[in-house]
Amino acid sequence: RGRTIIFTDTKADANALAVDPKLNVDAKPLHGDISQDQRERTLQAFRNGSLRCIVATDVAARGLDIKGVDLVVQFSPPAKNFSGKADVETYVHRSGRTGRAGTKGVCITLYTTRQESIIQDIERTTKNTFRRIGAPQPKDLVRVSAEEAREQLATVHDAVLDSFKPSAAAVLKETAPEEALARALAVISGYTDKMQPRSLLSASDGFVTARLSAGVDVFNVGFVRGRVRRHLGSEAAEAARDITLTACGQGAVFDLPSRFAAQLRDAADDAGSDAELTVAEELPPLRVSASDYEGGGRGGGGGGGGGNRGRGG
Image: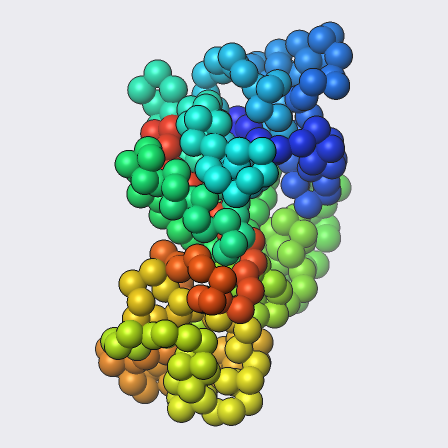
């Protein structure tokens, strides 16, 4: 369980994110409106490990030298005066809070498709190629939560066990041991409902991200819809959204409602290595001009500080 610093552009964002229940970790804000006394208490808790996450603005984080920061998350790529031009100096400062003194660290930057140009500017200036990934899939979150739940089992005091053994015995009479334990871990983790797929491209629930590898130059989204219509039918072609062309010029990624997921996988399996349409496992570099996409969701790209990670967050 390492330490994380999340960087936001505004004090309001830092306050809101620090108390957002979706963050799923105890966090404290750090910005110019925080009193010096509270600031020192927050930093001391962060240094000694009793606080694992701080949400900071750039001004508040200037000069911080804290060892053991494993992860830096940039809530958006830094831009100069919100001009859309990359603020590379700020990016380097943020990412440099991790991977210090020869240790490894990870920096993740969340961004929208329209901010791809900022990411590319940072890549060019720092001579660092970022890996782009989509938002974590529900199965990824469950995997991590299950491991944390398994670790929690070891924290239960022996004196408590007798109170639960009768119920445990009753469960084992009705359910196989492995299934019973899996169900218990699911309850501990908070995942008891059927998981819905999530888009890599936009992080929207109930969507899957498809990738078109055309093998020829793709000039517009109409070409993409035509290929989707050829392989999956008119309904899927009309349902495709957030079509975004790839930087290589010969493909695209887009979202489809999850009801088309099985059809998409079947078509890919039938075509084998020659498949034009596949379920995207990660996002390729994307084009950024307005004519190259129909929309764009929030993903992430990042790197620096001893490790490179991207898209998602």
